[in-house]
Length: 283
Ligand SMILES: Nc1ncnc2c1ncn2[C@@H]1O[C@H](COP(=O)(O)OP(=O)(O)OP(=O)(O)O)[C@@H](O)[C@H]1O
Image (tube, rainbow, N blue to C red; front, top):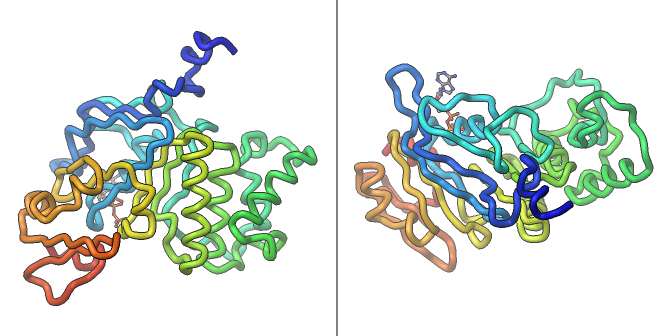
């Protein structure tokens, strides 16, 4: 493919083309502004952490990029084209929910659904496909339960399969909604490493919604922090600061860096704590 052809493809952005571009973007539900005036250009390979208290609009932000929620204002481009549903170049790890015990799929079937052909009901096929699925299962530590019904697996086991499914088609943009939820430390590290590899080795842009920045802090290029209908965007050092978060929350917030970890403390609450949504809710 010539570089001119690559640039004209909606699915294959040139390295110079942003993976994500939002201009004056906002979402309103009735008279409630969830967020507004978001201007963001995310480069290939860039890792964006999206933070904020419960209900601040983090998941909705991902849904606008997936074409599941319309913007109330502004525009969004994904991989060089207007947002649309079902792009095979966009991987999505949805927020944790437990699958129905009766779900008629094995673990390896769920992962295979992330491969484009399988999404459209094409038959289970090549050795290469089977190998790809097996490798993904092994990468997320799911090899031992690959043939068990997904509905009978634990929440953390199911979550690892969702991560494998999202990575199956080698996404150029990876949207993750609290992907480490319900994982033990070992598997948090394994999934984080897979996501990091997709960013570094495959130049995927990553949008990572989380309540806890510390497990991924070393990989984060920028932070988008939503609260009270407003947002702040910048590097960790720019956003995770007492003055910035106090202004955003309109309440005293103290941010302390300790051994490379960020600890957020709200003055009127007792004790120091990690970046804890339960505490933030009370702000
Ligand atoms: N279609 C909708 N119509 C009306 N309100 C909605 C709709 N979708 C989401 N909301 C509301 O918008 C708010 C933001 O929801 P969202 O799930 O984006 O928050 P979040 O920051 O991801 O929260 P959490 O940390 O709890 O997952 C919530 O109060 C939710 O009820």
